[in-house]
Image (cartoon, rainbow, N blue to C red; front, top):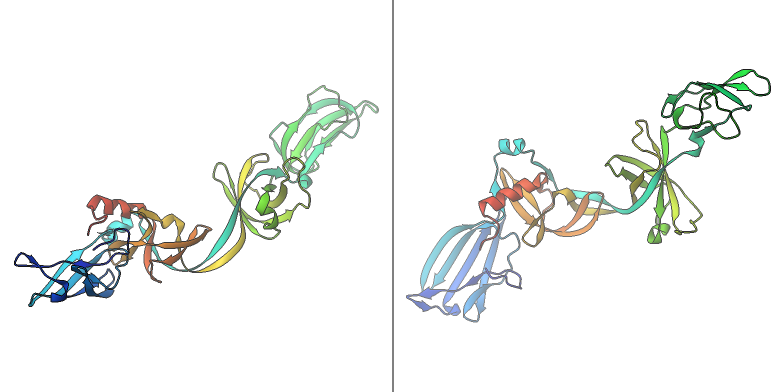
Length: 353
């Protein structure tokens, strides 16, 4: 098989009694049986001093070969195996190795924009607690970081004017995120406590350049913190104003935060789905491996796994469109495909003609 800088074709050179046979003095037919029983026929025509197949040989170059030839008046027939990128793993062992396959088929491919931003406290869920009357703090009932309920007593204050002691209570339920109060101290107009209800937070994503005209309210978004925590939501609001310094525009996402994993002030990444396209065939992006110079997946037929070289298109949402190289309905390895690659490389079945 010749494939140096050109599409692969079979070349046939023949000798009889030590002498080269002219291409017009021989006829050759080749049948290839690929994994899954697909059979391909190849015919030949003279080319200089040899025969060349009229048909090109598609990847992968892995098949069982059957040859019929008539050379210098003699009839020949032979068979041989020419496998590459192929291995066999019994079903039980594959299950133990957590090798999972699925059938390739149609898929919606989202177009995603990657943005950065920060977690913010919802202003409607933030309370700055000030005393009603100036006075002296008699006792402090809650500390920094304490969770308090609505109406819970935070401090006891003796009024300077009436000398009566009154209770300073939490106007909302939440977490005390700031405390500027000490027993015996005198109060003024500044807040003594700041309470934040973090059961729901805002994520403000920064829009620059081309994102400005593509992100709008209602689009789905996946938010990921730097420690890997993830949450799903939608764009709730896009600011009509741009920041003076950065010229960025804020897109807001409102997210539930019952476990407090989203912390106000921390940086986050946002993946906003701005469009979607239907692909006739698509594979999981995590299933892709490199084989020679190709992006590939590993097809499964029974207990045999074999490489499939792919022509790829659009990507998004963890999927990759397949434009060629994989037949509809083919089962391919989606989880732990690297184990198949390693087994093939160990067996030496990488590439041989």
